[in-house]
Amino acid sequence: MEVRLAARAGFCFGVRRAIELALKTSAEEKGPIYSLGPLIHNPQVVKCLADQGIQVIEEVAAVKEGTLIIRSHGVEPEVLAAAERKGLAVVDATCPFVKRAQQLARDLAAQGYTVVVVG
Image (tube, rainbow, N blue to C red; front, side, top):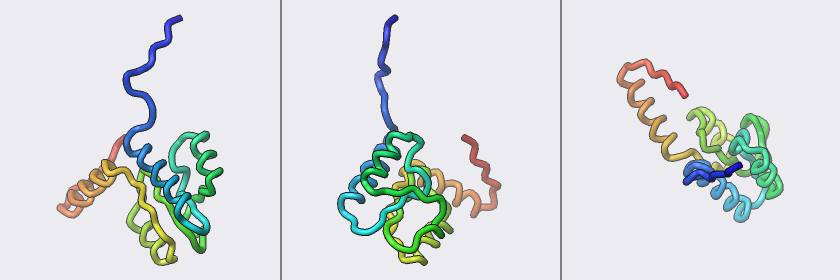
């Protein structure tokens, strides 16, 4: 059997950036640190982040204080607003490509288009 390794393997830019931001946050911030949902869909990485003190939560209401990391998929503006109202420090690890797509969708919706995101 021949094993061939793809020319490009590993995490995409957005996921790699999110992991780096999370690890930097765990090294620099005091107090509890949470990710809103698993930072990425990789149980080994999620465990590694948990070992660094980053706990996974499913909703902002689950925390009272600390730092909240937004995963690379991003969240709705209402979620960010809820975190800010609670006084949480927010580390937005949303992929820049995802942010651009979100902005384009907002712009089109503001122009009256019905936006459907598939994929």
